[in-house]
Length: 358
Image (tube, rainbow, N blue to C red; front, side, top):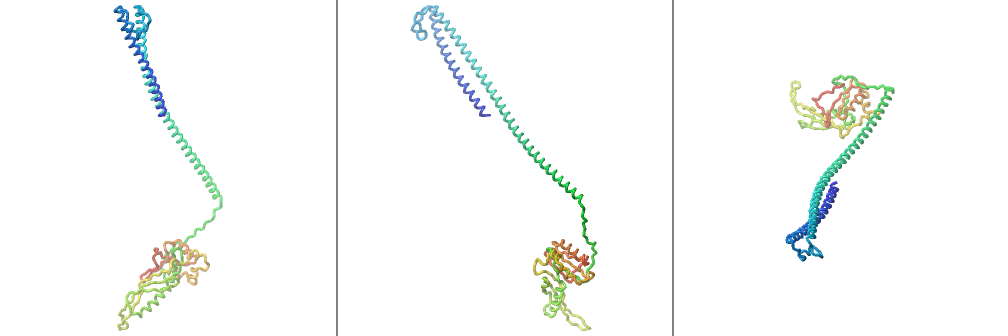
């Protein structure tokens, strides 16, 4: 738009300059004629006043004649020159009027060009606004299409759900058996106790009684030794477990039948039971899948009234403990849980507590 405006303004300016050049040339010619007529008129007037013939040589450059001028001829020539002079003045006035008209036209053309530029700017702004509005309408159409597609998909999903609900309502409802254990009653264990360990979902038998028997024999052998104080030792492995323990050996004065004698005292301070390798044991699912599993073999020949099963269980095997407890409950055996933090072994000692069975 700006280039078109510049071309239009350039074309008007070029035409205006050419017209002014022509008018200036015409004005110059008219001025020359007026000067010539003025000088000739002055000579004629002076000749008339003196009532003498005009010098032919003086006027030969401007007035060309083959006969001497008379008073009437000079008067006629004077009138003709006056007429020409009047015409020249009128032509000059017309030229000035035309120049004023040209200037006024130029001003009008400039105003029209300015208004045209404003209109073109408004048109371009309107075009841009229309394009933006068109894009916005197109975007709304796309969004409306997407929304309609989502609505259609939701309606289809709703219809599928309603059909599935109808099928479920019309189908026969199966009876669901909820397995549960009775409310446990805790009691301290005093009879025979069988130990298991659950870690990483694996079940292992903990042979505590056999390891304690090994420790007892080790303590008896230590009585004859010459070293006193706290002694570290270990026994095993038994069924994959070893027992590391501390015993304290001391000598005391005792009274036997009125006689004072020296006696050697050996007692267990603490013990820790650990498997030789980790992971240790058999996955509980495999144990239940075997008809002759380790649980049933250990429980064989034991009375449920006199035997308690103690399970040392870690946090990652609480779910498996629930299944094991249900299995033992079905066989009539009470279960005692001994939760242990991860990475802490089974430990015991003279000051330890007894298991609480449920």
